[in-house]
Every structure is written in C-alpha cells, then in structure tokens.
Length: 295
Image 1 (cartoon, rainbow, N blue to C red):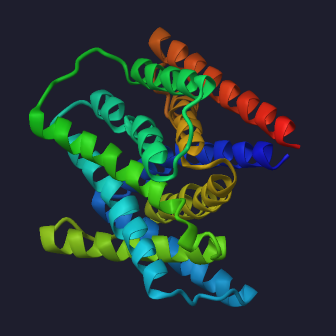
Image 2: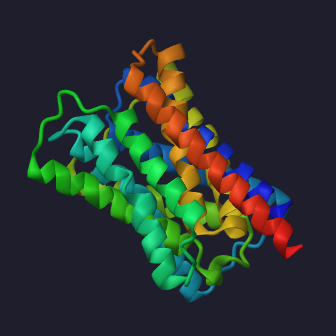
C-alpha cells in the first residue's frame, strides 16, 4: 500500500508541475521576464510556507549538515535547473532543450545505483527506456537548430536536476518535516535567484492582475503542492522511480496547452504520451508486485 501511495503522490506532483507553463505564460503576459517570475515564484512560496509552519507550530530548526543540503537543493537544484533550461531557449529550440533536459531519469538511475546501491531490474530498465523515447517524441524533431552553447546549457539543467533528486533522498533530511524542507528549498531558491538576477541585471518588478494570478498559481499549485507530494513520494519509492514517474509532467503540459492555450498536438505527441503512460504503468505494477512479495 505504501508503494502505491508513493507512486500516486509522485504522479500528482508531476501533474501539478505540468501546470507550470500555463501560469508562467499568464505572468509573462503581465510584463515579467522569466528570471523575475522564478524569483517571485519561490519567494512567495517560501513566505506562504513560513506562515503555515508558524500556525501549525512545526520546528524550523536544522543542523549544519541539513542546512547545507537544503541550500544546495534550493539555490543550485531548484533555481539552477530552471535558470539553465530557460537560458538554453535563447540558443536552441524548446523541443531540443526538453529532450536534452530529460536525460535526468537516466542520470538519476545511474547515480542511484552508484550512491544508494539501488538495483537495476528489467522492468525499471524498460520503463526508463520508454520514458526517454516518449520524451523524444513529445518534444518533436522538426525545426531543431543546433548550437553547442544551448546544448550544453540544456544538458546541464538535466544533470543539475538529477543531482537534485539524488540529494533530496539523503537520509540526513528524511527526519525533517516535509513543510520545513520545502520552506528552506524555496527560500534558498528565491535567494539564489535574486542574487543571480541582481548580478546579471535580469530582475525587474511589476504588479497587475495577470502577474498576481500567475505568481500565486506558480507558488501554490506548481511549487508548494508538488514539492510536498514529491518529497513524500520520494521517501517511499526512491529517487530512480520518482524520476521515471516525473516524466508524466510534459503530458500534462501538452494537455493544458492544447485545451487552454490552444496549442497544436501532433501524432508524435500522442505516441510520446502513450509511451510515457506505459512507463508509469510498468513502474506501478512492478512496485506493487514487489510490495506483495515483501508482505
């Protein structure tokens, strides 16, 4: 039952993350650039979490080693991933960027085997392969311009995120309350974002209806909620399975884009979605079977 719960939590987390482009575009229509959107997204999320934690009376105390891990997860993992990915759009197509970024399930699986001694079974290998091929089809292959700097930026975003997933599974922070972990992650991400954007001159502030709705959506629906579910699911099913199930995210983005933003959906996207759904089913059934055998 716990494994099934972990899988469901991770999938719901991916669905919430998948709504990110919708709210980001809404905020961008209000006049913010993406670096400013990222900074405000994490800052508002951190402040909302702080108020909630104080009301609930959760402990915010962490030791030095835990603080170091949370600093990495926020300033490097969360903000770094988004910053490198968005910057790659300046050099290569978003489709190619997506393909290169989603190397992270492969990287997570390899790192999990090395760091956490996880076993690579047949079902996990098949699911991983299907998810990667699915992402390739989802991103599309037409009109891709190749620029070495853009390729490096997109690959770096995927590698950073793989480290984020691995570090998030560290035993030193497993004892912490999930809300405490997410508070520090979002706070560190916002601070890292403000420092980076301030140094590079990319931050500017504006306030209107579109920006308010966009930032609140990004902060609550696409940050606090999915991060909380992700950390809960991660503790149950492990980093490699969480990474594979995380590939459900682009399917949600495509569905929302087609229905709400009137973006086109082609045959390749349908095939890619089917392959990713199959990978999710394989992981779910594999973990369910494993749970039954252990009980």
